[in-house]
Image 1 (cartoon, rainbow, N blue to C red):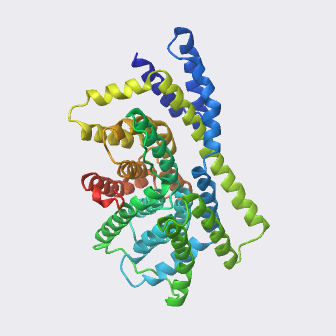
Image 2: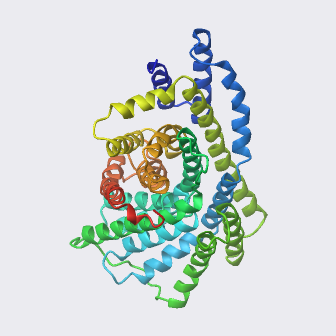
Image 3: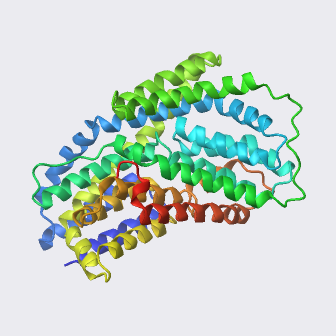
Length: 447
């Protein structure tokens, strides 16, 4: 009977590849499949009664309230021009250093990741502002495109990351389920705050890897010009530009790490702080608030709709024997527990070529995380491995979202093949960090 859930999985993936909306595909295909299975007594129709309970649970989840608030914070910072000022001042500060523009892009990208957590906003903003300048300064097109696209994905791993918020909710449920299956009634929990703390060192390592590669790549580039900006380096202006976002990051993350606020409460602090920054920059007006609110509503609705669809898919997948299929696969693998873990990481990496991180996070991880947790793997460490792996899904062709975002704003002279070629070294850097975290779990601060 293990072939039944496999058929459901293949049908769902096929419908996604055809191009049907993700949320409707996950819910629609699984419900139709379950209805077909009912007459053959493969699926118990009483399971359908759990769907409203699951939807209510999602809408009533306080942790997930952080998602729209962090999106609102990031959208305000994007629209308020903070990113443009940061990049301009940082580029001016590094203008006398060969390759200084690329270094400033990584630094600003990391700060934007920590203050917005939105990949699309960072890639589009950096692509519009920095990509034409980099090409004019003599950087290779493929390198320039790869740097901008990859820097944008730092928002996936550097907290406060929306991806970590979503993954934290998934891992919390998976850990609870694993403990229930093992008969543990005095249960431990894993929180979004735990993931934020655990992601700090991996995020820093990826940034360092980007910097090392950037310096190495441009050391012998004879065509590279010094950043041609006549503006004088005003240290006070640079500090002033960086002070507000850095303060906001400190307030959001500091309140979480110090135990003063939950991630949901900290996201409210971040949203309010972003409004203050926009006010200081003279951007607050009715149109600005309307635009940012609409953008937040659209993105949040998309995420929660996918979440509901994925929850329905997961319920029906388990109802047709999906757990037995997963157990069969894991038990058939030679090499023990680490072989199972590496197998899952490889599968997630490969799925990143065709699925985005939300689909993987809410469809695949709920299926594979409980068995891995029952094998004894530490939940925060496992979640960070998933997070780094999911970060690569934004860069892997052909459906990496970061590539799509960059293609939409890049000049026509930059070929799509150059964008694909440019991201390969940065994907390798991410995989190296993944290997480091896999082989040295102590890199996760709260391991």
